Length: 68
Image 1 (tube, rainbow, N blue to C red):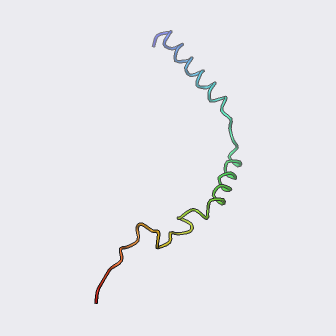
Image 2 (image 1 turned 90 degrees about the vertical axis):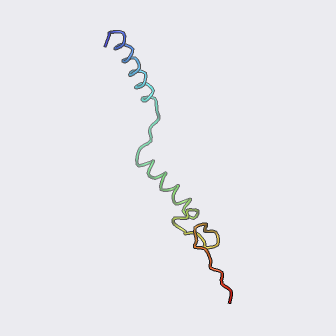
Image 3 (image 1 turned 120 degrees about the vertical axis):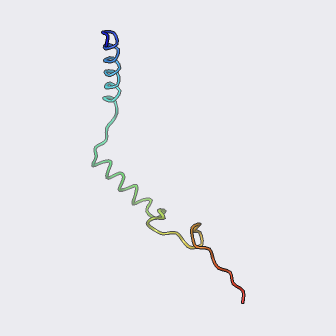
């Protein structure tokens, strides 16, 4: 690698590190608490927790129609 290419590569690395250093961070404990609160607030709308009513379930088995 030539000297100018090496300097150019190092400038890109420094620029990337400056961008990453400027990012606001959130503590893991705060992020976990926020995620838990979001899940608890939206639990009543989650079909995996509440289930799907049989009338609105698009994957229910088809009804058999039989005539006597």
